[in-house]
Length: 170
Image 1 (spheres, one colour):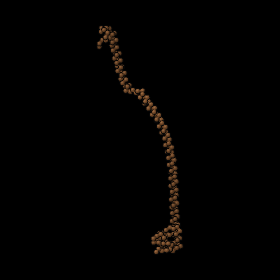
Image 2: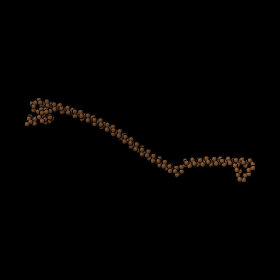
Image 3: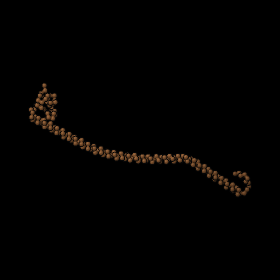
Image 4: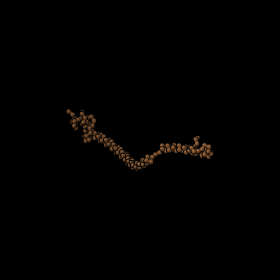
């Protein structure tokens, strides 16, 4: 290494020692500078400007406010939904009751119609029996004039029957 300007080469050992120490200090400072530059590069890569940070922070506050509004709306809609589901359940039960009542009434009407049909058949049979007992067998075949119910073949509405009470067809 070259001797710095103004220093003598043959001087005392203390000058060389000071020079060596100074050189060590400079080398360690250069190493620190190199490390600090690396840290600065990393910081620059991870650095966010104050303006960017404030913009992101403002956006976060806005999103939190929007989220809170959405939560309130969701709670209201959920309440409406629960109310509607309750109404649907009540109406479903009411509909089921009405369906059962209708089925019961329908069954009753069918039963009554069957009874009436049975009574009608009994009356026709009874009427035909009385008519046959009072009239000659050829006068009113299978016809009950009071109920105006036609009988079987040979009755007043049959082609080969009579045209009126007791009159043969011409």
